[in-house]
Image 1 (tube, rainbow, N blue to C red):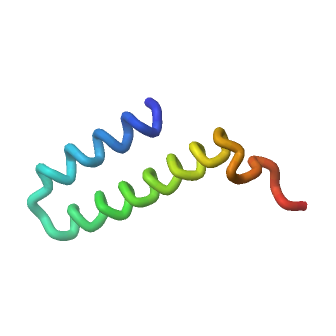
Image 2: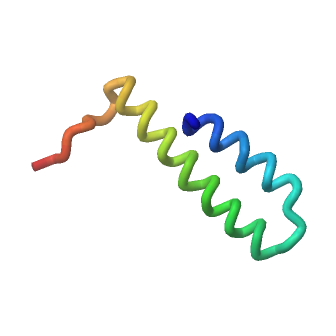
Image 3: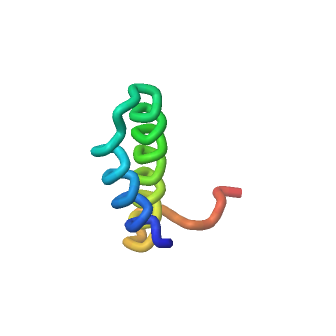
Length: 54
């Protein structure tokens, strides 16, 4: 599964979540996935380096 697919699934789950605790867990996981995608795109565009700084 790609990160984009994972994000889409999390968004769908969020729409159907009834429990407050479940919503918060899905929202947190969605934020992490979106951040991971942002880093991946920045690395592809050369905005940040993929190598560790040491």
